[in-house]
Image (cartoon, rainbow, N blue to C red; front, top):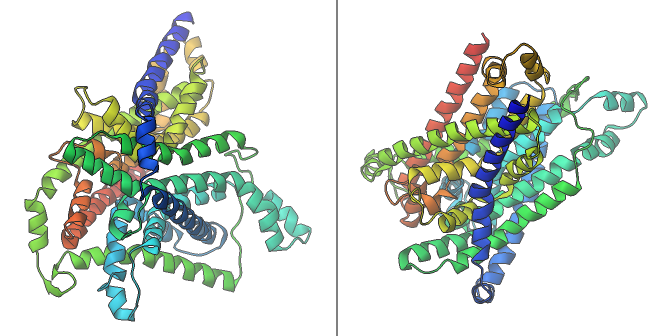
Length: 529
């Protein structure tokens, strides 16, 4: 028994030291680089106050719109008895499979000065600027908000609604008195998660921001300046500290608003209901959202075959050949390597951490759980910059290993929580029974627990892989000069106004991620057959 306790403690200490080295110390090291002179120089610069104001206003506007749209979409699928829910839910999460900058390209293709819908509908105005950032940010963050809201609606108990109906309480009062209080914590967490995603993304502001400056766009510009001139990174560090503020506020709010009464077990699920009008409205809304998702992707498929968008629509394969000649195929292979390494390492680490916190309680369990969940709040740009500063002289700097490590840490929280919740539902006495029978913990894990959680492991791997394929935040600081991840070619093509080649790369990333998702679904279905 003492031997098992000792082994558990040693494992927890190793994991805690790993997070200290790969998360806490890099962030603290980055913050320690802030000097009064550097802070004053950045804050007093002419572009900084407008950038802060634009970041807050675009972020709040896009977050509010995203949550409203996602809540309505989730309600249509979870509370209204319509058909084709699987198709709609797949469409709604499709934007998660391409980088944020691709959504901005799609907006330009549709609503730019010579966009397809601009010409077709005779629209006036410009997609560039405040509303361009808002629209692109909504497209980028909508799938995450939809999954968060739909996930919690699926686990709501219907007993209260049945009682309210018997008492004659109107549907609207049921919504305000039962649904909204139940959703309070989720909506609060979703708000900060979406806001953080939006304000730390530079792909959308860089492409459709026009003259509207944001903090993430400034940070990208400062990073490019530091690389080209070998200047210090004081400006980036100060901006990074500001971008950490939403994460800190979200962390504090999360601690002050603990989850109450929302267990995973549902004795009486809510039965979807609604008359003819509700069904028609749900279908109409779902179709509109589905079209809003498909149109930008469809525009990519048209643009990459046009000789020169938008002046010469004649068919050509030249842009595909040019993109491949410029290294798109080679960059894709490296992206697959980065994603594979992050998927394998991240999945294994997340399983170990979840096991230590969910089943092998110990001195460091709460600390490991806290830091595992907190990684969700650290923006990718900030994590990438902190790694540049902390690991600059290490052997892994500017190698595939640091990119895989950064991606593993950046996307760690969600897979960890998947496994943490799954392990909590596995019989808690398995290890004790094994000890009684003389079977070691490792054998119990290998022969009993892993087969039970194999589908969750698969979901975790897919999550790491897909996000590593399409991320452009942390890797923009850390990737080797050549060959870089294929997603970073989008920024290069954006700077050079090569929309046709950017469209091809966007579809390349989407195709790979779709194949991984489909393969995962087929493997899961075959294993269950």
